[in-house]
Image 1 (cartoon, helix red, strand yellow):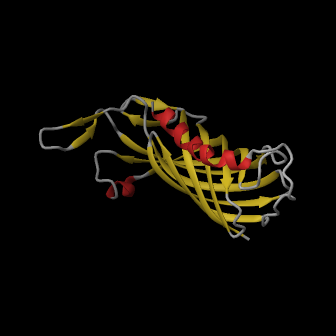
Image 2 (image 1 turned 45 degrees about the horizontal axis):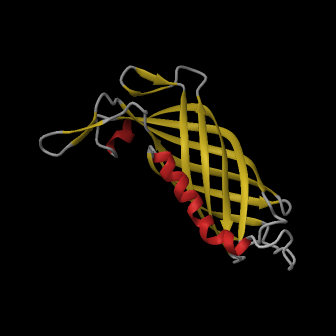
Length: 214
């Protein structure tokens, strides 16, 4: 159900922009030339919660762009469920550690339909790979104080995605991207729920991109 909601918000902007962008196979006016560099912020939503990231993009041509990005988000086990006690306090039953993902990715973005759709809608596919730092903190301790006992774990990260950039402004960048992250450990993994180690983390993330081009 949550993935359907993410997909809905991903494609919602297309319902408003596509009628303006698709009218003929070859737009009459020349293609817009956008700045080669982009730097900005990623606002991320997933089943595990809210996350933040940053990115840098370098355009090589009208269709190919290199990028790097770094993000911080929380990961939750799919078997977690919350319990609310008599006093209104919320607990996650059996949870031992909070798990935070900090992947650094390097990858490539490929623009789709550049000769078919007007430049105010620039869809693309993208993919990246790189190292991932995973932090665990004791769930029994208060959120911020628990970072004093944080433990670092190292893994291999990657993702694939589909998204679009919107508008014709050549100084600011606005976009949206649906990604599937894969974080893999080569050891036993991390323990979110007591006694349950996971070697693979990740999942779907709806990412809103806000930045500047120069």
